[in-house]
Each structure stands twice: as C-alpha cells, then as structure tokens.
Length: 446
Image (cartoon, helix red, strand yellow):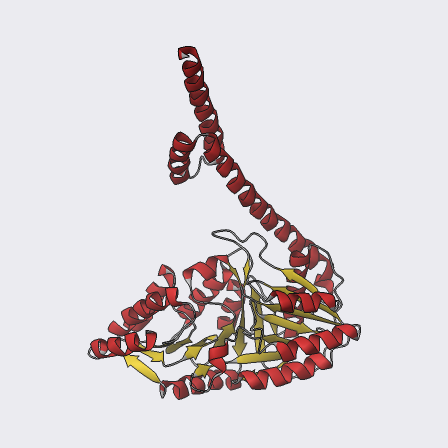
C-alpha cells in the first residue's frame, strides 16, 4: 500500500514537472500565464493540463487564421493591383500626411456621395440599388434587427433568385430564421469571426455594402425595436459612395468575403462613370494593425483651429486623450458629443467619465439625449473622418473597421450643421453644472 502511494506521488510530481516544462516553452514571454497555469496544474493535475491544451489549440487556430488572412490579402492585392484606378491628384502637404498615415491609401477625386440622416431614407435608397443589382452584392454587417430587416431581406432573396451572386457576411448573432431563409434561397452566408473566444481578434465592424462595384454604403444596420419608436431621439448618418473610391471599398469587401468564406472569388472592376466633381476621398480599412488609431492621432495633430467629435462611444487610448488635452491647452477648440442612451451599458460610465475629463479642462462637451449611431470627426472645417470605427480602446485594437477621409465643403458643412442642431437636444457638461447633470444622467440611465 505504501509503495503504491509512493509511486502515485512520484507520478504526479513527474507529471507536474513535464506539464510545467512544456507550458514554460510555449509561454516563456508571458510571466503572468506561467504563474496562473502552474497553480492550475498543481491543484488540478491532468484535468488542468487538458484544459490548457484545449485553450492553446483555439489560440493557435486563431493565430493561424491571422497568418492566412495576411497571405490572402497579399495574393489578392497582387492579382488586382493592375486594375485599380490610379489618379494623378495633386495634393497639399496636409492631405499627403493623411495619405502617409493611411499606409499610402489611394486618394481619389472622381467621386460623388450622398449623406442620409434618417434610417428610412437610407433603406429606401438601398432597396432601390439592390433591385437594380445585376452581378453581385457583398453585404457586410455586424448584426441586424429581425423585424426591420425584413424588407431588405426580401429584396436580397428576390435578386438571388434572379441570378445575382450575394454574399452575406455577419459578425454577431443573427436570427437563425433569417440565416435559414438566406441559405434556402442561394445566398452565401458566412460568419466572419469564427473563433468566438475571449479576446477574439477578428470582430468585423465594417458595416460595408458593395453592389456590383458601382456603389458602396457605409451604414450601421444594427437597429433595435425601441430605437424605431418616435419617443426616442436618434442621431443617424449614413453615406452612399460612387466613383473611383468605390473600387477601394470593393477590394476591401472582396477580401473580407474571401477570408469569411475560405474561398477565392473572382474580382471584376466595373466601368466607373466620370463625374469630375473634385470631391477628394480616401478609404482606409484596418485589419490586424492599429492604423485607424494612427490615422485619428495624425488628424488631431494636424488641427490648428478646431476639432469636432460626434461619437457612439468615447473611450480613447492614452495617446488620443493626451493629444486632445494638448489641443485644448493650445487654444484649439474641441467639441465632443456622446450619447446619454446606449445599448452597451458596460461602456456608458467609462465614456461619460472620459468626456468629463475634457470638459473640466475647457472642451465643449455635450451629452445627446438619445442614441448616436455614427462616428464622425471634423478637423479645422477642412476634413471629415467618417466610418464604422468606434473610439474604444478595445475596438481600435481588435475590430475590423474602416474610415473615409473626405476633403469636401459639403460633407464638412453637413457634420458641423448636424452637430449644431443636435446641441439643441443635448446637455452640456461643465464644472459648475456637473452635479445637477449627474442626477439627470442617472434618471435617464434608470
């Protein structure tokens, strides 16, 4: 009996040494993980090691997906780079700096765009374009509402029956009934983020729709039932693009479709109608790097007179927050608007706390009494940055997002005017009024 106990103890000690040694080899650059897993092995032995192997297998699958994604992007760009429109556009020094920070994203000038402030206006235009689709539609969204999406879903089904190739790429949970309807009607459905684990890398927040490579939309279709009721105030903005910039967006949509479906698809460049309206636009789609954050940092650095931010969330990185503080101390006007109502309650208080920090040092900070469902930054009344990006530390580093830089008076004036109009339905944060406003915040939150 004693011999059996000794053999068991020796076996457990050797197992612990072997398991810990293997773990140290793979986790040698993460001291925190070494300590945690060593304690787990000590108290759970073989069971804990099985858990470790399972978690590591998921991690390396995710890491392999990143590597495959990079290789596919390089191959795809090499195949189509000869077909991309290349405009010889003379730019000033500031716009070149934007281009440099956007990893040499192409600047296009032959563009038109339409801005929608109401969801119903967007939906009517989108349905019209879907009905005119002849070749393909790439529909890339985070999630949709199963009730309000019914009209768009029916239009997609009709075009799929008419021979149009449709790829529907989603990131978050969508009703199984909707997915089944699309699959039953020959619509290719793919979930973008396959490894839904803690700290997932590829969360797709692109919200990009490409129709025949003719037009592209950047729009958030995550509409909740309660947001469609008139008693809720909603600040919405969606943009429809046509012209040369669509090719850049179309490339991004095709790359995401390749990654989500694990299958190469043929790319065709459509004929672009010349408009010559001198709307300078650049499109930047981040992937596994933080180029969206770098772009925002550079935009703030270029500001000389004013910075205006109207955002769904405001949880900035230390770099962005420090630069905004520096801008305020340099007598640059900073205006910030964030919502009082949100569906992400875990982010609500953090966003408000950062907004208060800027208000206390001189920024004009407003809390919109409703939902804000878009993100826009305006610099010096010259440039507008609009897109699916979320100014959130987590999303800036893990989300697949996009951003467009528009140098056009119409777009800049639109975002400034919209901000001014939304001030009428907002509460301003100031040091003197903060205690009174806090009661209003908690009342709205409850």
